[in-house]
Picture (cartoon, rainbow, N blue to C red):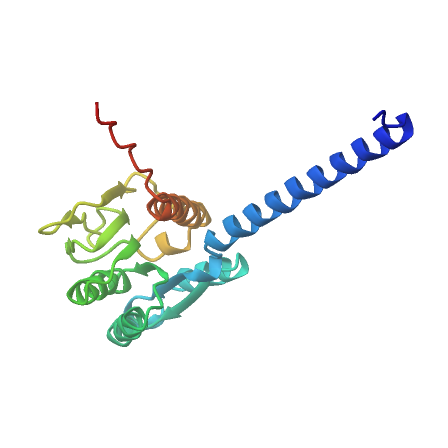
Length: 228
């Protein structure tokens, strides 16, 4: 049977349209699936801590505002609040709310981030990133911390931080003693350092995402050898 030319063309066009629609829907479904795996900025919980008497660490408030404007869930506290924050994070984690945890602090508040991380270590809660501005005590970093950046100066206050037992994460001590524009009371307010902190959060969240996606991929099964 000979198919009329016009009918042949119509069938060909209809087939192409159906194939394109199928491919588009498949691509959209894949994109939606991919989007579901992407963590939003709001899933990154950033807790910041001021130093002595909340007076000299207002850079933590400025950084909190910057993070919130970018969509992160950021809150700033007095130094002594670290224990209640630790309980809140541990309770949320136990209930399955496993946000990406970032801790940032200045001076005594920097010390508080290490105390908080040690408390979370006892509950097996991982801390993705800690950023310290001129921590005043040479705390050892607990093993549940994945990344730590320590901005410090040899100014009588700032201390270099060291790995604790079992720590296998990334540790970066940045000695800023030579920067005469910074001091113990201004290091937390530096726009340049704030930008570095935000860039670091983006970097480690992307790495965390890549690792999670890789871990969630089904492992390909090796074909069974044929019996001879």
